[in-house]
Amino acid sequence: KFQEGMYKRPSQATFTDKEMRKISYHLRNNYLRRSKNYISPRSARGAENCYCAFFMLAATGLRTAELYNLTFADVEEEEYEYEDSKGVVARRKVYVIRVEERKAKRKKFMYRYVIANPRFGHYIKRAYENNAPHNKPSDYILNTYGKKIPTLYKPFKNILEALDLRYDKTGKY
Image (tube, rainbow, N blue to C red; front, side):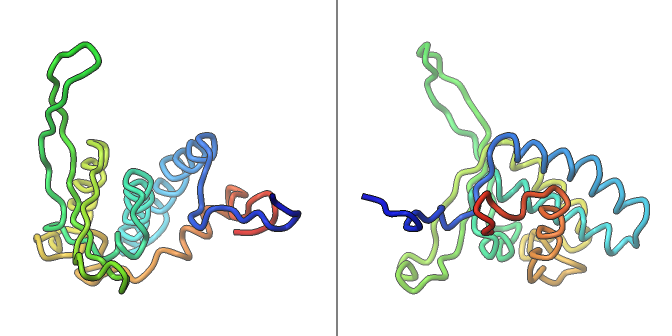
């Protein structure tokens, strides 16, 4: 039985479909366009990384630190074969992401694998092109001139504040 004040929202921030569309629209039509027209190439690269990061996180459910630690070698494209509802064998491209375990409880496994849909590949390719020439297999997917991006907290916070989505209905974030 719940008492008032006992309910806690999930530890991960979750967005409704409507909120996701709002964020997506803002990233595509305001954030990226403005950054490419009015700021330095370095900042534009950062904006592109932020854009890719948001959609990679949404497509996979990875934690932000896990995404920051991914290298191009950690992502493999594979073809998945399955039987659809009509019994027809179909093929689909998926991305297998090898994520290093950081928590002590799970450290004995070293890695876990996350399956991402084909759309994830679009953002990997975009990050690959954006970060050239720092896009060798050993390079971080999200990098600034070869150095790992430490955090995207501030740009994400600014985007959510601009869209009035930073806080939930109870005033928490």
